[in-house]
Image (tube, rainbow, N blue to C red; front, side):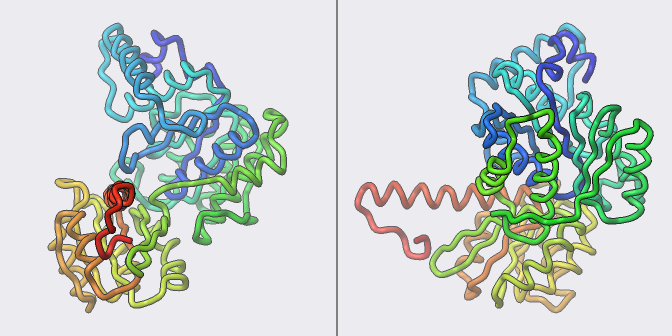
Length: 393
């Protein structure tokens, strides 16, 4: 990354950055903080992953997806740097480099960067961030990050650099010990965030994410004086993070879409499903084969009367037939429908009034795309004076 950034003129140094690491909640925390910064009058940029529908979602500049022409220009500049250095970046490295280039080209005043995986060796970790925000850490990506909570926490702690303020919402003593040790090495300020803040994002765990963003904004006021109590409130109220407990209604059915993708995320989500989603409930479920699927099934499947298994991203997806068998082994009615659109349509035809679609961000993306297309179709028909199809009002 550094070798490729040099011929580009070190674009990551053109603006201050805030880096967000962790296992779950990174995206919503980053989105909330970016919204606060924008509400405070800063030209803020946000880099997140993965995208749900359009790759341009990964780069938001002043609240808008990257302009297609700017994206092309940034790719060309990256291609030139790759030729000069004879280095071919990986896919994620290329996307991260595009972020650094595009944010400089549009004269962003501050960037919020979501770590892709881990932290220490992540492509985003070439910046010297004003603040390192670390969301709850759990067991995930063990083939790359290690098999214990401490080793994974050590990888995440790699985003802590000298002069970086550290904020975390972790409450596991093992994780906190690792993070504190890294912060102490540089004499950095270390802040544990315990209080919660009201947020438009549903779910108690989202309140924790919002609290982390709010505390970070408050602590950054010395360096970013345009942040006020009022702009923090406006920013939180305006936060939108698609595919994360996104709710919609169609034909009397309540649909929830969430990109929960590991046991840690499922454990945080389960109380919300149990307490807030009216039974009987149907689950449309798909997950990547490299995840630890059994613990996820143990947490999630018992909350539903029926499971429709699908494959949102073949060949990486776990086979739908295997997932359906897993559900049946737990005494739950289950069906396999490999194509996500067909799985969603089967769910909509069912008798259940509450449908939850989740297990993978790829599935959340497929669901968002499906329902957005339905919404656009209805709008076009209404403009032509046609009646909408039954079941899609």
